[in-house]
Image (cartoon, rainbow, N blue to C red; front, side, top):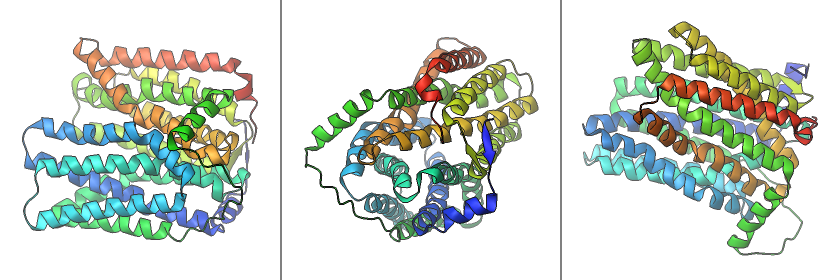
Amino acid sequence: MDATVNDITKGKSSLFKNRNFLFLFIGALFSSPGYYVYLIGAEWLMLTLNDNRFYFGMLFIAASIPRLLLLTVGGVVADRFNKRLILFLSDMTRALLILVLVVLLFADMVTAWHLIILAACFGISDAFSYPVLNSLTPMILEEEQLQRGNSFIQMTSQISPILGPALGGTLIAVLGFKGVFIAAFLFLFLASITVLLIRLEKDDDKEEVHSPWQDLKAGFVYARNNEIIMSIVFLGFILNFFFSGPLSMGIPIIVKDVFIGSAVSLATVETSLGIGALIGALVLASITLKKPGYVMVSGLIVLGILFTFIGFSSSVLFTAGLVAMMAFILQLVNIPLITMLQKTTDKKMLGRIMSLLMTVSTGLVPVSYVATSLLISAGVGIQSIIVCSGIIITLIALYNLRNKQLLKIRQ
């Protein structure tokens, strides 16, 4: 890996002496685990309320559709209005929605449709908070701090799928559903208050006021005319379409149907995913990549090869090892990808460009799920799907070794 090792203590100190980044990081430490505590509670409550698994699936669909439809709008809003205020409103709105659910629980009035409507509201909130978080970081950090800053923010996202469900499951067992949702409310409420402590400098540049549609169109034109941005967004699409669906759906199916494994076997593999990703984020928080474009493309090649091997794996432990390595490598792709996009984008366009990236990544994950489901229903084996997806990712990454503009980006 082409990187220089920095003094870790010095690197952390320079970041966390920045009060704005400190409050953004603390806010993320509250917000992301709080969301997962809510999620595990909502999922288990839905399974308890109704035996019809259609409603359980509707939880995910209800959150995905508004997120996908509104992400580009969220990017325009992020560029037109105060980013701190948007992030505050997003966290506070989610906290208040959970508080409403707590009141319904105490009144014993909760139904499956309440949870579905709540999921849709969370999806709307996500559409506005996602572009803001990634466009706010370059506004409060120096350019040379961006990689480490993104690594720490990403770290909160990797801890959350491990800590959130564990904490949520414990709270359900000890305090019941009321306890778990009160905890989620407190997490998100504290996150919103922390965000209010961020102080952004006013931009003295006066821009001509356009309609939201003109702003949205300007964002697409800006992205289309920037070869590096288009390359990064395209790689984001490829990674999420050919990787997210087959991996998320494939691992449980392989463990249960191919390895004839137990819930412990599945937990072993999924925990290795979180551990690998967390280690990757920690490594990138302590080093500076000299050639992030080269590292990203090389990492994508290795990721595709490892993913292909999963299709041929014959044991739980070997699969867990591969998954941990993939999660580590994935950080070498995702963090440089976001950092390069932040560095090469005009700050006045950051919200729109980040929303474009989120649309083709997070927003299109449900499309990957649907495509994978259709292939499985057509009789295609999940291991074959994973092998083909791994090969496609590898070939596209190899082709991008010809992308000189992407590879020559330096820290």
